[in-house]
Image (tube, rainbow, N blue to C red; front, top):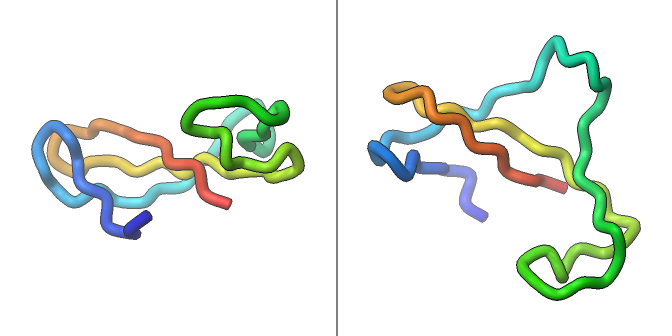
Length: 67
């Protein structure tokens, strides 16, 4: 996926941010095994990290899973 993310609401370039100050520790996305659908290409042992991107204009926040 392209490193340039665009806000779906206002078409502004979104800025990559860091998660900070959570009580959950390290947050990760882990596949539960082979399934059908858009996450079917993720291996069961693959761990993805959610990265927040924030629109500087409307403050919409989207999370992208990156390996």
